[in-house]
Length: 114
Image (tube, rainbow, N blue to C red):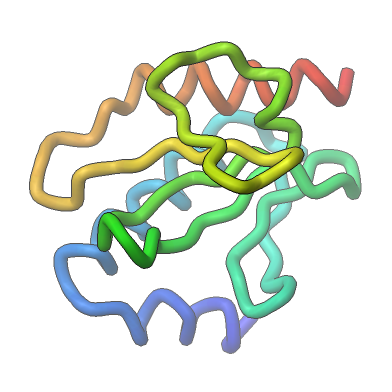
């Protein structure tokens, strides 16, 4: 767990605070969500299956939630870029977090695993 905590602590503000808030929002959506470090990134699993992760977009310099089955999302505000399977939801670290929208996206992602 220390490595996972270290990932967040290594980030610069305001990205660090944003990622920590996103972590809490995701974990708060369902008691069966687990939080692990995989491939050097914080991943969230539901019943043992990876469904989303946190990272920072290199070009936009913004934190994001990457959804593993993002190709199934039709939300126009999500970015697919050159990913075949995943889509990402960018979060402005200087603005208010769209908590309700994030919750809906996480619930939609979890629905793919029910």
